[in-house]
Image (cartoon, rainbow, N blue to C red):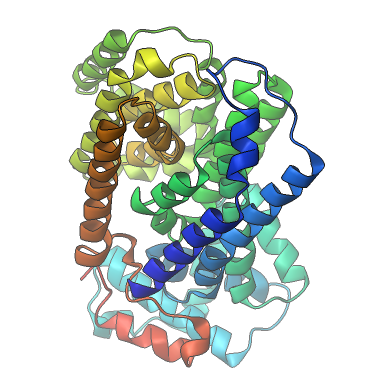
Length: 428
């Protein structure tokens, strides 16, 4: 946890030091909707510098990780090596890494004993993972094939994907938020940072969609729909984000948003067969999720409800600010998706697209309070609660298996994987 804390502190320090707060305040004073002066060339350089420097600590942590995040050794590492093996022979270390990943997968996915999992052969691992990688989006496969073309080590996959994710998220923050320091903090304490180290391909799609919000707000449909289409090539679930283009112009009162969530909770009890049929048509590779048992996502739903309550309290103050309606209604869509999570596990992943708006919405909501003492209290309460929940989720429950943190240069990569045959942090 110390590594993540230090990286967060360094990022916040970089924003506080380099972000041209005074210059940006001068060109964005007054209520939203007023005409802003264009950013000067000097200010633009400062913005770019602050954005790039601020994401370096996170980039170092994310790109150097090894066996951090369930899907890294469960999906991305072995599937990349399987793809690479079709073009060039793997090294002995790479073969053993893929074999060990297959054995761990046997324990996790099929409940095998360690002895049974160890019976998996290298040929079986090759066959399994060569089959599995074809289930990923063609966009993500294309990215992998570029790296395979250069015979790149799998560690380059984590560097490139981390750079893409952070580049898009930080660009979205710098373009859309007036509070980049708080937005960077909420990137961590809302869990998005840790999530991005686990569901790598989907989080690339989420990051593309978050960046696309700029074009939804500015009513540039061609760019918005092109970006969502690109995101869908990485992860087909991104198609749900098409709805977001219509949110900035909606004028639905908060009361009706609450009613919509309540209705979704009722409808969820009966709509399971219809949604399953729709997924069979649109994305058959995800039908397997409908066979899994599902528990209602109370924690995510509770967080979404808290954000909805806070947004509703400040709705009249914020409704005319750029992005407010878009982010507010995105949270509502996330809650509607979560209403179905008790029947369909996939809905938690749909919520991730809409809940990403919390990174940007929460800093705005906290600063809509005009009374200074109340504003400070709101900052302390909101940041404190989100920090507490992320400490419990990551440190205590080890969601996404991002602890302990390991870097590839700390030792033999294969030896770092072997203990997971006996114990996977956060899973067993």
